[in-house]
Every structure is written in structure tokens, then in C-alpha cells.
Image 1 (spheres, one colour):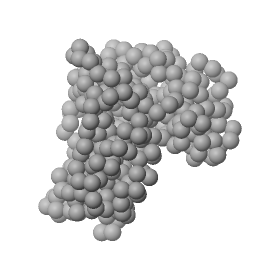
Image 2 (spheres, rainbow, N blue to C red; image 1 turned 90 degrees about the horizontal axis):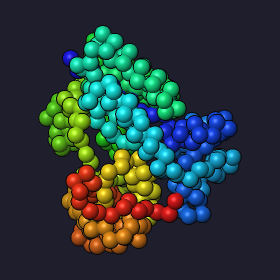
Image 3 (cartoon, rainbow, N blue to C red; image 1 turned 135 degrees about the vertical axis):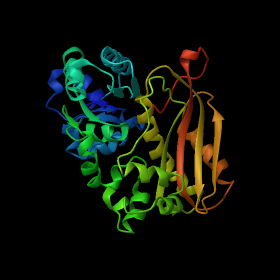
Length: 354
């Protein structure tokens, strides 16, 4: 029986700022870019979220929602230092650690003899040590697999944990909304709702062949996850090769101009996600992906010359869209990495102005 812990720090960047300046604790704060320079929110605390502020939101919009919002510039060196300290704490308890970003990771505690093999007590101790030594809080989910552990870590946020024991998997998964399945976005949700599917219990009624017909390769994933099945192992040697953001639209984008209007919001989200990537990577290429209304698709990529900019993606969009010249149902932006530990060379992750 596997015992998987998903540990996720609470509002990590904001928490580090509050740690270093406790006078901010009661204020709505965000970490991100300046609104005069097209900045976006990288993260915000729970006080700011009460006003509707969220990650990847333009800073100008966040300030309209919350005029008293304290916007702090990102201090990546400080966040990475805290993240390394947290990573070292994880490794005291198990060498099977799979980082997902600076502030979250999967831990495989299946073979741990600490706390008489209790992953629940182990996760509690790890969270206590993180708060004591690093000065930020973390939440955790404990479950028999990665899918359930990640869902569980959100349930008692902030500064809490939730356990899904093997004998509770069936009970837990049946009431889980299908939107909580990774990869189910608004378009897939609406498609499922049209046939009366709201929860995983509803989804379990569909045959694998029906899901494969309607959702392609993703159908098999839906079939397994709605039953709480996830055979992926915690990969301690996992290193990213790319990062992208995609959007499938409920109504097709009619032309290239309509696609062009969507590029800034996608780039803002990519910007935020890149800031959360672990150090040790070089960006070598950038790419754009388009899926047309006839389900044909194209991907255009180019070597990164100097920076990841709005103009570069706009230029790529013009070329990529001409390959189909049809309405667009999906649009995505991304970058490709190399692992800097290999001693190769690449370009720094230079994004929109901070």
C-alpha cells in the first residue's frame, strides 16, 4: 500500500513577505508586477482573495477590486532560498521527493518507519518543522496515490491537512465534482453536464469505450481517475522539459484578430507559472499551439533569441494561424527547457517587465 503526501505551502511568496515583515500580516497583500508596466499578480494572501484577487490577474484589475491592496515586487532569490530550505526538510524524511514547483512536492512515505509508519503523523511533523525553521505554513494531503493526495491538500487550507485512507477512497471519490479532476476545464465540464455528469459517481456510469469515443485519449484517464485510480509513482528524478498554458474556448475564436486578443491573458498566466518553477532550468525555445474547429492542430516553435515577449508570441500566432486559416477552439503558449545540471547553455527566463 502506497502512502503519498502532497505538501503545499500556503500563499508562499506572500507568506515569505509576511515572515520578513510581520506588520503585513493583517493586510491584503499581493506579490507581483507594477500596474504601470503591465504587471500581474503572482500570488496573494487569503485576505486579498476575499476581494476577488487571484493569481495571474493584472495588477491594475486587482487594485480596482481591492484599492488597499499592498503590492510587493517579487524577490525570487529570497523565495528560492526558502524553497531550498523546505526541500531539505522533505529530504530528511524520505529521498523520494518529486518537486512540482518551488513551494509544493509529492513525498512517498510508503517505506517510512517513522511514527510507526503513520504518514499522517509524518506529514504533521513535516509541516511543524517547516513553520518552525522556515517561518511559513504548509498544508498537506495524505492518500494512497498522487491524484487523491493533491486534492486532499486543498481541503483544509491554510495550515491544515486531510487524510484519505484506502478504505475511504470509494466514498470520497463518488461525491467529488468532476471539475476537480486534473484536465477537466470549462469545455469538458459543460460537455459532461449536457449528459448529466456532475460528480465522479455520475462519471463512473459511463463505459470506457464511450469515454474514449467522446474524449479521445483523455477518456481512459477520466475512467481511471473517477474511480480514484492513479498508478503514477513519485519520481524523485523528475525534471520538466516544457511548460505551457492552454485555453479551450466554449465558442470558437472566429479569426486571427480574435486569437490575438487572447494572447496577453495567456502570456500573463505563463509569466506567473514560470515564476514558480524551480531553479536549474534554461529556457531554449518558445512555442504556440493552435487547434482549429475541425480538430486539426499545429504547433510552431522558435529558439528563444532574447526574451519571452508579447510581440514574439503575436508574430508566431500570425504564422501559425495561416496554416489553417479557420476558427480556433484551443490556443496555447509555452516554453521548452533544458536541465542546467547537464552543463548545457540556454537563455535566462526573461519575461514581461516586473
